[in-house]
Length: 119
Image (cartoon, rainbow, N blue to C red):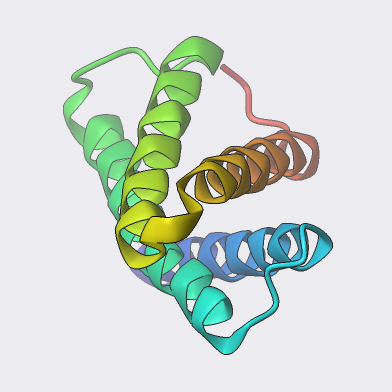
């Protein structure tokens, strides 16, 4: 039963992240089919990878998870998402940087509010 709860929690985190980050993309006027697919795609890569690292760390205690270590991981995700978006939309690098930063700040802050992690 614990595995089912973990899978459900990870799926919920992924779905919420995609919804939040698509909302930010829409607010920043990135509404084309290509941009929507790109936002979903980068999150299908980065969100499970981030959550896998966090779960692996909870089993192996590699680093102490606190606000700052999670923030560093989130910055890494932002950079990766920007790089992917910049490759996909070469002529819009500055806009992709703004998009990646805005999406990840928003989802990070909402995640802190919703889940109130205890570091």
